[in-house]
Amino acid sequence: MPLDSVAVRLLFNPNNTGGIQSLRHSSKLEANKENMSAETVGRLCFRSINALAPMVRVGTLPMRLLALDYGADIVYSEELIDIKMAQCQRVVNEVLGTVDFVAPDERVMFRTCKKETERVVLQMGTADPERALIVARLVENDVAAIDVNMGCPKEYSTKGGMGAALLANPDQIEAILRTLVKGVSKPVTCKIRLLPTLEDTVGLVKRIEKTGVSAIAVHGRLKDERPRHPVHCDFIRAVASAVSIPVIANGGSLDLVKAYADIEDFRKAAGASSVMVARAAMWNPSVFQSGDGNPAVRYDNHAFNTKYCLCQMLREKVESPLGKQLLSAQTTEEICEAYGLQEYYKTTQAELQARRDAIQTNHNDLDQPVLDGDVTTMRVKFERREYPGEYSPKMFLLEWSRTESLEQPQYETVQRSQDRAFQSIVTVAGKKYRSTLWEKSKKFAEQAAAIVCLRVLGLPEGREGEPDSGLVGKRKREGKRKGTADENAAVESGARKRRSSDNPAEQRMGSGESTVPNGVERRSGSVGLPHCLSTV
Ligand SMILES: Cc1cc2nc3c(=O)[nH]c(=O)nc-3n(C[C@H](O)[C@H](O)[C@H](O)COP(=O)(O)O)c2cc1C
Image (cartoon, rainbow, N blue to C red; front, top):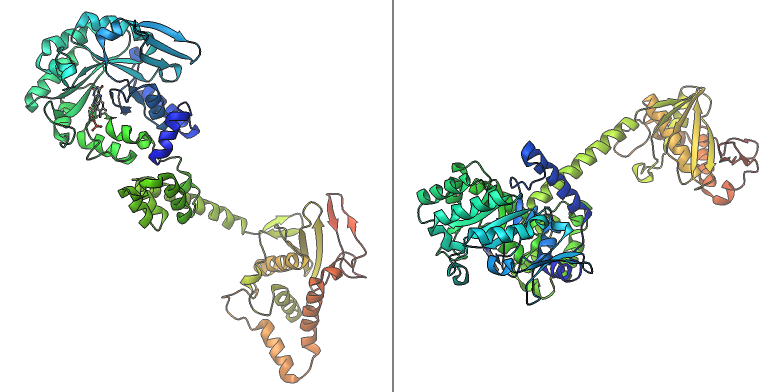
């Protein structure tokens, strides 16, 4: 989804829940429930989840709701410093329908609402177990879990012994986490960075695991590494295999996570249970969207129209790398590539093909003759372009009847009142044949009935590509050669009658109109033949 429209949603419609996303959430919830053991029922599960990472000033309520809306399973708050939070009062904001944690100076430090209660994790900046517990108890009933930040390398965090400073003080880490795990009913997690050696990192996470935390988020960078440095997936992998609690991989935004499908690739590369995304989500929270609901692909929209609409959305960003890739795309597949939706494109195409095949199979079944009372029916439509020659199925049927010394085929046509469509029955050798489909003209309805008869009898019908049976052409050629019109006359008269029955005025000529009980209007087209509009 283009960023502009996301921004608009952030400003004006943060509560919008797409139906598809809601469905996705509920299925993830089910999955989560499956992962829960008896004693953890109702507690947030951190396995197989995609989370919005904690981000100062970014991870406020609107962004969290938007991320949830797009498909994030869990959303972290921005880091909230324990000293400030501990001074807050819990206030129910009836106007907004939110719960606010308000500082003495009236500033709202943390605002949350019902929609995220079961999915929001409050991240705390703390260096003190007792203060951490006060804050955790204050928010306990309004959040799904409590996280402790042990990775922030910024001075404002480290100078108070918080954030990444804690990494050098594992005893304090243990004390804080044990106090929280013991003191609140909600799951407790922490977010760390890597220590200089793998051994030290693994040693630390093992100690952390023993405190009883429910998960560890690992930002795969060292304390002194900057966000532009590559993430160390191998370290995260080693950590993940050293503990049995879920490890949430983090740090992949710059090099690895550009679109939804990359989140799973990052998870696999890091060998982790779950993934936490910060910058990629800040740049565009629709990164959490699986693409399940992409209507341009799902409804086979014309590629150029899709491209046009997307360019309108990108506006001046049409000059960006994404815009340029979009502009050069010629197909829906190439457009999907630009947005990292290749997998979605492939699966959707496969699904649509499967549906096409299933429908075709159904139609093939319908192509088999079915006896309806004394009438043999088939699902046949007369497509004029499939019979390009001058001979029609009716003529083939007439000729065949003659060669077999049978009576001329008799056509009986009815017209439906609701849409004025026609359906014909042809009687040949005492047997009746009808197409189950209704046609827009009497002429077409008769041709369809003739086709049913010819197909059931395994006879040629004059269709394009059909081997020349010589049946009709031969008669005509012979007639012409002899210079006699007698044999040919029947065909010609049939054609004439056919032509005349094409004439709407003549079609209306039937005086014997009657309405049959099923609401179908029965019309006769030639005087003296009350139930047959024409005989050829
Ligand atoms: C704007 C911004 C604010 C951040 N604030 C926090 C924070 O409050 N707490 C925290 O643990 N990490 C914070 N981080 C770090 C991220 O959570 C994350 O660890 C880091 O950006 C790497 O993940 P990424 O590659 O997905 O961006 C912040 C990052 C950014 C870009």
